[in-house]
Every structure is written in structure tokens, then in C-alpha cells.
Image (cartoon, rainbow, N blue to C red; front, side, top):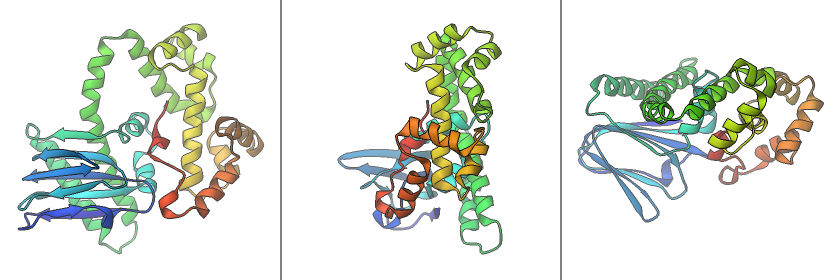
Length: 288
């Protein structure tokens, strides 16, 4: 995690390659006064204060704050993001959100702007502090940032869901998967909890997402397995237990069926890979 505070410098400030983290990273940029822009290849995205931006940070991307701009920025690595997202009912929506470029105007919501300002200031302060548990506090403040961004995106998603009964049911199913995938619920149990038959749930999932309920459930377990294998020191046996498998052997069979690679091989590949060639990508967080 890297954090910077910008207080109206006379020169423009560039956030670019020199500030990249090793591996996959994300940028969050808060602009309170002035202007900024993000460049990626030949595309320039202008940002006018007050606003907050969330971007998956790609190779060659560059952000530039204009002279006099006031704000702050965060460069976030995959481990900090994984921990900040957590395992709450809204976590699956946040995982999907972090893959998108989000721009949230703040001119009509000074209280939310103040919340973002407080979180960015606190993260910057903790990043410079050598007292204990600074990382835990940073992830807690980052969680608040993610929640506020998610709330802004949720309003438009709810408008879409309100016009589609199938979308509403699918959203309920996906939230239920987030709560119970570690318990290895069957498709039948999810369907019964939603008051549906297995076939009806299957029809809805295929209509809304083009995937079967079983594929969606298994994909959620696969995503979590990848995250734990690449961002934790838990043993494969421990990860198997955390994900509800009866044994490491059962987990190995599942993971190999889903990815074509045994979990131990994936973990070794990550540990041996260089910072610029990590096999995990932003798409890791996408499901279903």
C-alpha cells in the first residue's frame, strides 16, 4: 500500500510507473479541488473535483494532478485489497466492483466527501506509523472507502433489478452463495431456500448470467481458493477446511477440475514468479 496527500502544490504531480506496486494493483484518487486526468495508452480521462476515482492500475497507466489540486491517492496491492474486502454479504459485489473503473462525483454529498477525506488521511498517517497493527487499521479504513463506493454503484444496480424479477432472484441467489459457499450447500438447498425448484433456479441463472447454478457456486469456491493460495500462508489442508471440503484430497480434486492445476503447483508458481509476471490478475476477483 502506498498513500499520498496533495495540498495544492504549485507544480503538477504525476502518479505513474515509479509508484507502481509489484504485481496487480489498484488506484484510488480523491480530488477535492482542481482537476486531474488519467492516461492509459492514447485515452485520457478527465476528472473534475470533487470526485473519487477507482481504477484497476494497468501497465503504462499514469495519473496527473493539475497545479493547485488538493486531494489524495492510494495505490493498493492485492493482499491489502483481499483483506479489506473481507467476507461480508456485500463482499461479492465489492469484488465485482473493484474490476471496474468507477468515478463518483461528490459535489452533492459533502458528508461522504468528508468520510473519504478522513479515510485517506488516516491511511496516509498509518502508512508512516511504525506502531503495531498499522496494517490492520489501513485495511479497516480501506474497507470504509470500498463500502462508500459500493453504495454509490448499488443505487443504479437496484434500479436495474427493480425492472427484472429474474435479476432480483439472481441477486438473492448470489448473496446467498456468498454467505454459504464455505458450507458446500447443494444447488437443491439454495433453490429450496429461495422457494424455487432446482430447474427454475437453473433457468434464472442461465437467463441472467449464462451459467448454471453449480458453475456459479463452484466458481465462487475457486476464486476464494485462489485468493487464499496466493495471499495467505495457510496450508492446503487448512484452506480445504476453510472452504468446507472434507479433506485436502477432495479439495485437490476440486481445484484441479476447475483450473487444470493442482493447488500446490499454483502456490509454487506464485512464489517463484517475478513481481512483473505474477499469474494472478484483476480478473481473479470476478465472479460469477
